[in-house]
Length: 106
Image (tube, rainbow, N blue to C red; front, side, top):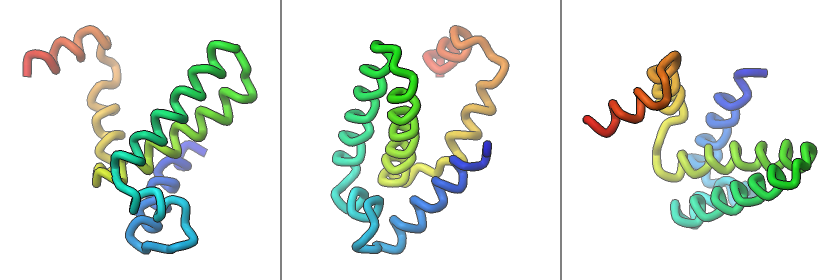
């Protein structure tokens, strides 16, 4: 199950590269990175609202939408999801406060 995001990112890349007119991903990416970012933001807001309401079922569904649309947004900007995973691995085990301070110093 942990590999689902990697497989999903690859499917999104394939649909982006394939330009399938019947593909939601293809159409969304074709509409531009601004539209992809806007859709990601909409889904994030919906997840926030579900969290505020402590609606576990809706939050689960909206969180899936957020992850999906984040991957679409990354693909629209030609950011490889594996590079995001590498960045997370680089940060693993570090205090968030230390990691953030290191970024400010670079």
